[in-house]
Length: 634
Image 1 (cartoon, rainbow, N blue to C red):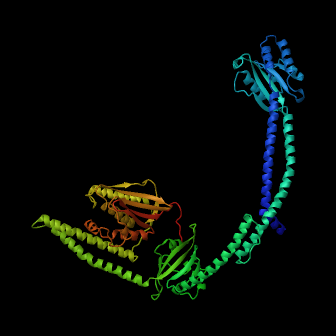
Image 2: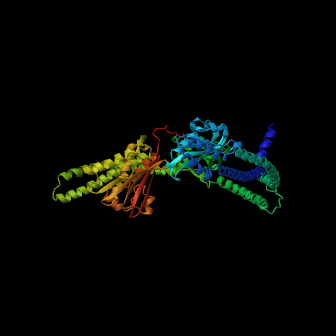
Image 3: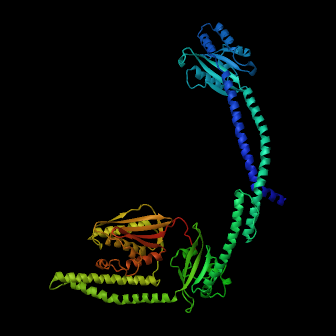
């Protein structure tokens, strides 16, 4: 039973069946449209002829109007009955009657209904409520009556013609009565039904012929397609020697030739691919860096010998098929595969034993042309020596800073004391001491910055992460600048500037940051923007949502940064304009600290600038939904 069901299902889904079905549907639609048009035209003609019959001749209209104006009711009613007897089809049970403007039936065409003459129209059982209401509207001179209306009377379908009889043509107020003609439409509907049945019955002959022709044509067309399907199946199995024998000169023949050509091309490309695979294997085997190929879910598919040595694995079988997270011990257990893919610098794997190397793991995404990430190539490098040198440099900066801070503080205290009791030329002495004081303060700030960087480099700075309303936080920082400027406590009190907020302060946007640490970043960016803006310049601050990332931008309209300096702007002690930075008390460490803080908060910071146009610093963090549970990518 199952085999029969599968065969039937396969046949229904086949091209053979679809072609026959299309032929059948096209024929059915064509014949159906032609028949429907014919039946519609035939029906329209019947109804038009019927409407022409159900009418009131002008002589009859004039006679009835004259009679209704005559005061001799008995003689007039006989005359009206005589006129109406010439109208209507008694065999079809047509009803023709005249009603005066008082609602009294004055004449009837049917002898069986003559007794209704002289009675109100509401007494007749053949006059339905819709017709009765329509007659009253016609008598009242109301233009909204229906001249022709259709409905059932005593179980039969009728069309009723209602014509007001006006003594003055066109003047509805001169209506002296109403002419009513109810004609049966049963014969017309029966004729339409009969012709429809005849058409449907005649439809089966062309339909059967179409089905037969469709199946024959489908068989002729699908036979070469079946042969091509068999050939392509062999190609998918790696058999490129099988060729089709189709010799047609149409599109299918062209397709068969191209598939034969494709088979030859695939055979050649497969040989080249095998050669390249062997070459790649040789290259990976002799590389000093460890290389792993992983899928998008982290499963290892390829690993070279250097990576096996770094990971102390005897052979590739111990790694291939496993998830990369099983082979590495990350310092932060919350580091996920996504973090590895998104980190440009990668992560470090520190040795468990002193003799083991420190590895830097960096992933490079493998994207298809459509943009889909199919996996990544992970490179392992031994960075033990490099980290040792960097660590020594960091320790040196830390030690020097500690050594210099105490004497510089003492010198600063003495200078402040001397400033209070200057001798000889007070003006010159005060100016000299002021310069010494400023330079000493700058050195102290430099040492403090060095200490902060040292703590960050050594991982001794603890981040107090919390969910913060980003817009309210930025508002708070900018308000501090505004208050300090007004009170004269700001380092920029002698400079005119305006901070423009381009974001919606009432819109709540949340990020996870350390408020205290990130406030230092914002302060530094605002101070830089003020320092390098012209007097009276504007500082533009904006917050935007870009694909789930909240991006803070601080823009000035100052001198700008040359393109060659942009890549070094976050380097320690790097200054674009050394003389100007020295005059303004800069240490060259503010942006470096800002980058360290933003990176530690899992954010990004970058800069865009044009010379003589201005500079814009950007900081981005992922936006969080304060009402949803926090996601853990462990």
